[in-house]
Length: 152
Image 1 (spheres, rainbow, N blue to C red):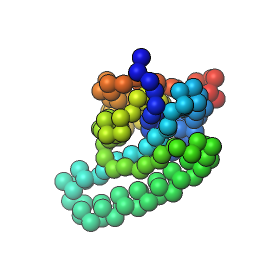
Image 2: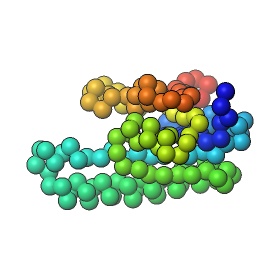
Image 3: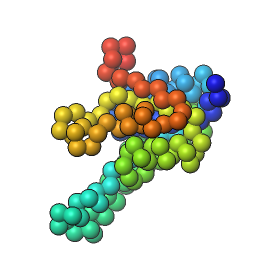
């Protein structure tokens, strides 16, 4: 097995992500690995086809990114302050595509992510990020249900 030096932890910055932190910390400590925490802001470019002005969409996306950066800083301070090499980023794009690209660009060795996410119509429209990452990733993916009794 390849050495695990870099772990990617994609987050949605909700309680679900917080419930996964102990799993990420366990893996990081076991392998003495650097943790990369990533939040992906979904781009809304497809709304330009329904007569929403592109500047309005850009302004909204910028506000989402700025809000996410503040939330990311809080999340990192609260959960990863004792791991000084932890890196946090807020990126724009399709979550599963961004995650897979990030893995390649940063030479990530393992992904730890939740099974949580969209349900119902949202899942039909946007799909399951975890499912797409599992099917596409060429590295180990540890998928954890944040609402399993042991984590609750």
